Length: 99
Figure 1 (tube, rainbow, N blue to C red):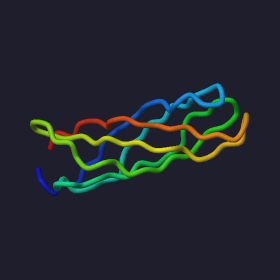
Figure 2: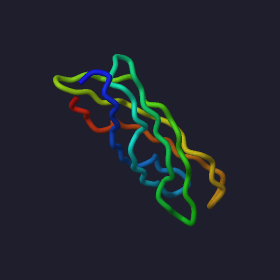
Figure 3: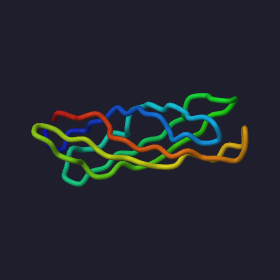
């Protein structure tokens, strides 16, 4: 239903950097189902080698399929200093909203 507030779930793994990677998952911010809408994603990665990272990004606009839509996202995590100064990249598609 158009204009209905909705969210999407997402999960994935970051790129491999400094000898490790992290997993992440969550639920996007709520947005109305209108053409061109986006969502925001933020959270913390899983712990690896004694540290985690934060992430925050906006999705791309809705990609419509028959009966629903989904979004592409990408971003870079915050800097961590264990085992050395590094970040990770992440990208993917969130769950399909059938509205």
